[in-house]
Length: 125
Image (cartoon, rainbow, N blue to C red; front, side, top):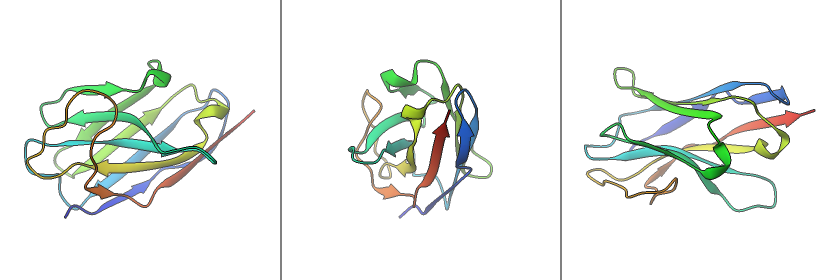
């Protein structure tokens, strides 16, 4: 099973930026999907962005062009660049991986086989 460890969260002001990193023990076997979810206090966990092994990407509607998901295939790192943050983006952000040989369909969420421990992002005005 893939092991995931996030880093890069923190506290920023409205309009600020952060880059989240997720170091994976390995990427799942192709085809696969990986992505980021988030969970705000009192709310359900929701999908933020998905990156598939074929390079295709999808984002939740609330992203509105502010976030970018990418990966480093050499060091097995998944990134999420956050820009123009607002207080509604305050949440714990989780890195996630789908199962080996599992290609996820459309949308910004997918069946998760492995979760990271989460990293806190706090946005204040």
